[in-house]
Figure 1: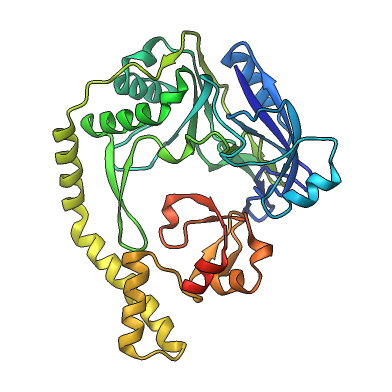
Figure 2 (figure 1 turned 180 degrees about the vertical axis):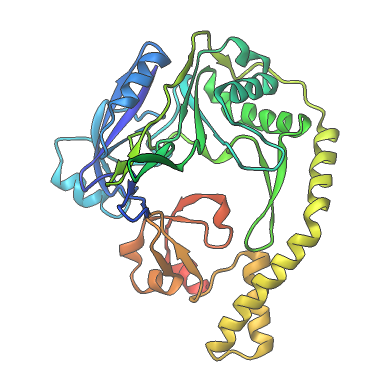
Length: 369
């Protein structure tokens, strides 16, 4: 099984726990080196992950090259000129894809959703087996997330600062060209088994969720497994990983799905939170309307623009965007300096709960907003 190791050329990628307890994310890759790695088992893979340095991360997809340089879209041309004797690529789907046999990551949060309880490796293993019986005998590696199990020294004793967090479940899988349809089936199975729920976003939208995160199944995605850098008085003590020897999950093997039942369960869950969602959305719209009025717009214009943000996800110059490093900018900042922010990773501007994506400003999109 092959995967890609990435080394950042400009600083660390691992998180840092500062002496005052502040968590600092350094996941900012503008330039780096990639190398293709190969392991015979997930147990060997686990050992490789334990050896990752703070400036390193992995990508589960592969490029067509064994090694080379990673660039952003913004500095791709200049790096190709500078390193003309090497392969220079961006971390994108244009260059990365999964092998037909690959290591695939499932991410499960220990406390995401009222109907989901994942407090141990056994809990995770049992849930996976319910989703698909193939997991019963599949090769599997379960690790606690890189920022979990942080302790603080207080008066000579260690006190838990950050618990189990999320779990990273690595699975050997084959026929991965069918991964998208297989994951869709797993999502439906989760709803049938009671492991689905609706998350109300800060904008009042109803987001369908299930026991595992659907946003991680992308071949170019960076996965952070290097240990957290802990400043005194903090330290990390992660439990030993769980490993199960076995075969590969076949993405072509179908699952028993009742589509009508899935739709019914989703609708019930949406109805359950409808009143709360309406109140949150109204507050969200009122908040942006107030900002537009402060910018000189009439009450009518302000309400129209605020509703456009909430309903059609249209962005205006006052919209704030949180970058992956937790810095906050505005759409206006991007308009004034599009080159600076091109390919910068950020949280979704409206639905921050949807995760991280890349900024790709264009003249057309900037003018339209």
